[in-house]
Picture 1 (cartoon, helix red, strand yellow):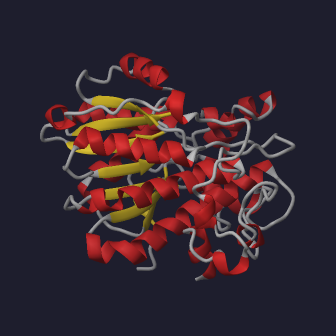
Picture 2 (cartoon, rainbow, N blue to C red):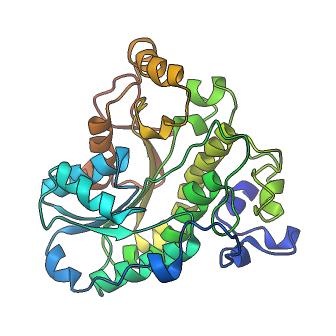
Picture 3 (cartoon, rainbow, N blue to C red):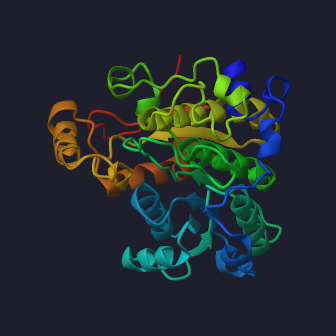
Length: 344
């Protein structure tokens, strides 16, 4: 219960002179990822005409990898109008065309998850674009992974980037859009998880380091520079990513507990299989980037190509089978059908 409260940003004020909620409004670092005066986009309007009768779906990290393939899959169904939430708008526009996304099936909007101000600006622009209509689906996919960094990098708000971008940025985004999701019957919110955050799997339990939030002393101290890890221990890049994924998946359960019954929103997490050639591994050593896909294809059988992984993520918000809330959708070992963990 304590872990749930901390992961959703609630139980820090009593153990810290400055609460985590208060720090979600601070920007005081000299090297910033987002400058409001120059990076903020003008709001796009009259989106309702473009959206038409299609479902409105937001995908973060939609300019590359899993997010791009998911966005393209949804756009090509003709059932979804996709908001590509990306760091680089021009890149987003370019790759959307390269992937053959139909004209009029998407819009590209600026979102820098390493800046909570950017998250707020994105939500403002999204609301201006869609006007009073609700939001059908929100897919929180964007992530950073910095396993080789000897020292932590920081977000504009002073959080270690893996936790700040992967978890805190998405946490704020979901909270700001809860009411918009609640307007739509059958709306869905999916936060991409990872096998590395599950200690009962090979990737999460046997591959060092293991995800471990410890006693959450880092969060209790405010999770702000120089505190870089949730457990308060020294920075470890690979573990920081895994810890952020644990927080993502815990947040899904807490969102379900707090909001599903009253709003009808289906909250879920998912693992599409091992995308061994994803750019998420771009900071790994060259030998690893060559050997890992081979290992996942021929030893574990957990390998999945980028296009298929995107189709699997799209399925979570498009398939009638995937309407259940508080589930972790997963594919393993070359499985051809969706599955979910359940006590029943």
